Image (tube, rainbow, N blue to C red; front, side, top):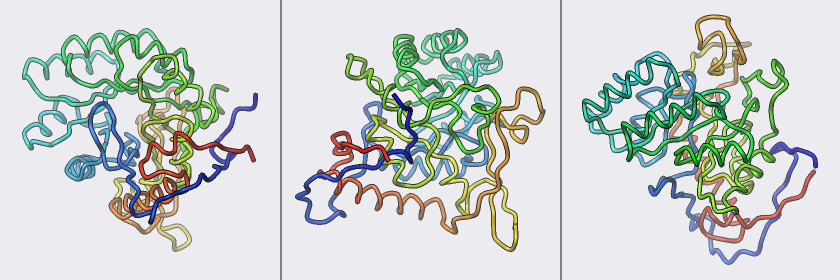
Length: 318
C-alpha cells in the first residue's frame, strides 16, 4: 500500500443540512477539556513563546510551551504565579529535566499538561521519563512523542501517556528523512496510528508535521487525529517569535527545526534546518480566526455541524 501525504488525497463532500457554515462548531474535546480549535502551534522556539502561550491560554486555545532556553522550573513557577488558566509545558529526558520535575513537585506547583518531547519517542528513555513524571505528578496529563507506528502509540499509552504525538521527518524544517532515511508520510502515519482507538486504546493522537495549508488540518482529522500541530502556519505570522528579515523587499520569518544548529547552538547530530518563509501579514489571532472559518467550512462539507463530522468523511487518492 502506498503511504500518503496530505497532498495525495482529496476529501469527498457529504450531504449537509446546516443552514450556514457559521453554525458549525470547530471546538474539540481533548483530555477531558474543551478547546476552541483542534490546532496547536508547534512547541518550537521560532513558533511560540511565553507571550503567545499566555494569550492562547487566556483565549481558550491549547498550546505547548517549548523547552528551549528557559528552565522548566522557572517557566512553570511563572505560570503559576500569574495564575494561568492552562499550564502546558515541554520537557526532555535529561537529568536536568527530572531535577526540575522533582523541584516543582516539592513546591506543589500545578501543571495541567507535560509534553515529553524527543525525536524518537519509542524508546526506553521515554518509558523512564513517563514513569518519573507520573510518580511526581500523577494527575497531570502526559503527551509523549514523537512516534510513527501503531505499536509505539499503544506502548506509550500503556506506559501512561494521556495522548501521543505522531510524525517523524515530515515538518518543513526537518531533515530527518534525508539524514537518516526514516520517515512516514503524514496522512498514512496518522491514519495507522489513530487506528489503535478501534482496538480499545482510547488515546488521542496529535498529528505533528506536514501541515502546509488550513485544509491539511481537516485532512489530518479525517485521518484520525484529535489535535493537529503546525509550525510554519504560525511562524509566518507578524507577531510570531521568529526573527524577521527582508528578502527581495519581502518580509520573511526565520523558521527552524528543534534539531537544527540554530536551535541547538552546536552542530552535533543535526536533523533540522533554517528556512526563511514569507510573512503571511497576519497576526496569530487573525490566523486562528481564518482557521476557524476554514474549519467551519470543512465541517459543513463533511455534512455535520461539529468537528467530529470529519471522522465520517471518505477520501480519494489523487
